[in-house]
Structures are given as structure tokens and as C-alpha cells.
Image (cartoon, rainbow, N blue to C red; front, side):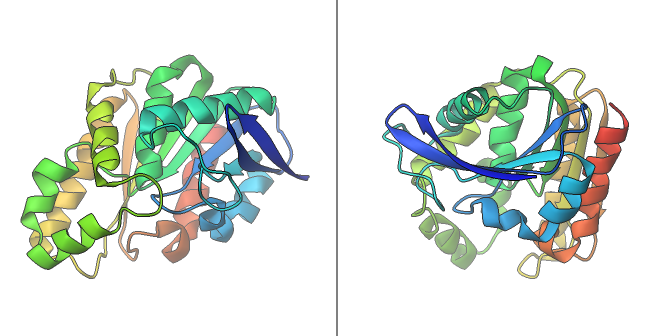
Length: 241
């Protein structure tokens, strides 16, 4: 089954696609990284849709979605996603999957609507203390390039506001969590890679049932470098329901 839709959210429409058959257990909801949209999941969507129904979507202003007049912060994006799920009649429970900045959104969604979530997969997700703890360890060139990338959706300040919002959210309780972290980032020194892995491991503390998987052969886009790790993480959560 494949169904595409444009759903009205206040003054704009969000594009979403439903793929696969509902197995009665859950719907997998996937959120891409900063500036990315639903095509970011092309490498894994076929296999995941064999396991369960999957919803991928484009955040406002990206892909096939219209621009939103709301602030481009995680809090607003979570509200927009919630309305999309309600209006598209996609019932909980959900397994949430977030890559990079999408992981920030999915963590916030999971804490906001914990009783609707039966699993969370964070794929090289941005840690809430990225600015304070990680950025200062990188070269000036890296920091300049990092700051300049915020032109696709939301600016640098809105992105940092999202990380601040994440710090203010309450901890997860009983939602099973799998953290997948990229173990082979070309522009990271050995020390930076160790720090990154450590910060990813720290994310396990938001759940009573967390597991860390280091994707040794992957750069930031684990879904492209080692797609089987993402499929197996989602399968594990589905099997545990």
C-alpha cells in the first residue's frame, strides 16, 4: 500500500506518504535531518515497509510541503507533526525514528506524547549540549561552515532554540530507545569521534530501556552507509511490542 497526501495545518499544507501494511502493532514515523525531507529515507523505506506501516513526511518549507509562518523550532514542528497524524487519521502507537535534527524533534514528541509512543530510534541525533560541549572542540573552519548551513529551514538561532527546548523537556520513562551513532566521520579527529560517541551514549539516560549501537562503517548518514542497522533496530522494537 502507498498513499500520498497533502494535509492542511493552519496556514500551510504538509506532504506525507504512507507505505506498507498496518500490522496492528504500530506505525513507524520518520523525521529527517536539518534541511532534509522524506527522500532521505529512500535507502531503507522499502524494507521497513515490509515490517509495518510507515509514515514519512516533509517538514514545512521542504520537499513537497508548503512554508509555515510558525517559528522553525522543534516545539512548533512537533505540534505540526501531531496535527498531521491526527488529521491523516494515523493512530498511535508510534515507533519514532529521527535522524540528526529529526532526532531532536522525535525526542520532544516522545516526551510530549509518551503514552502514544512504543519505541524511539535516534540516528546520529543532535545532542542537546552540542553547542556548549562539542562545537568548541572542532576547528574554526568547521565551526564557520557549521554556522553557515542554516539557510534551508529555520536559522542558526532557531536551531539553537530547539536544542534549548530539548533541555527543558522532561525525561522519557518507559519508552524503549535505540541510539545509532556514526563511528566513522572523516572530518572528526580521534578525540572528537570519542567525544561524539560519549555524547551519544549519554542519550541512553533519557530512557529506562536504552541501547547504543555504533555504526563503525558509517558517516553521518547511517541510513545510506549501513541501512541494515536501521532496519534491524526498527524490527527489534516492533518485535518487542
